[in-house]
Image 1 (cartoon, helix red, strand yellow):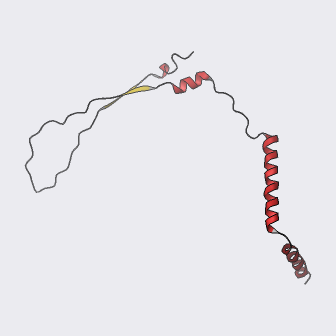
Image 2 (tube, rainbow, N blue to C red):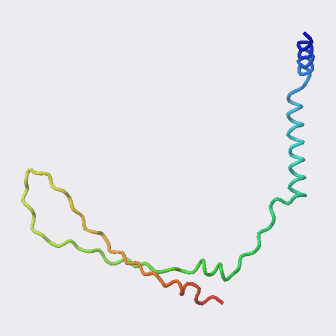
Image 3 (cartoon, rainbow, N blue to C red):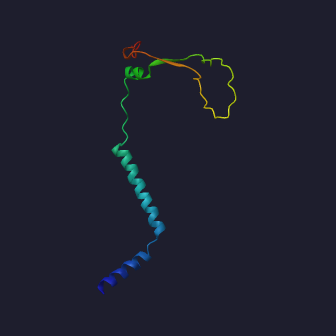
Length: 111
């Protein structure tokens, strides 16, 4: 019976607590603690600047791409109409040629 009396006292105390006021105070305290942490602990240190030679090497072009003219389909005589279904064949619209520079040429011209 002693436990029930303790629960009744806890329930009576909780009934007097203003939940709106408590939540506002909780958010306020969390905000102040966060501001103090960001100000004193410096969790976002500045990054060291990147080496300009490395940046230039990473931004250098690695090759060229040229697109050839479309390949025309050879002229053929029209096929006779038949009752069997026909499978369509396609010709490539354009031939693509890719030229890649050798790996040693990437950093040329960089001071």
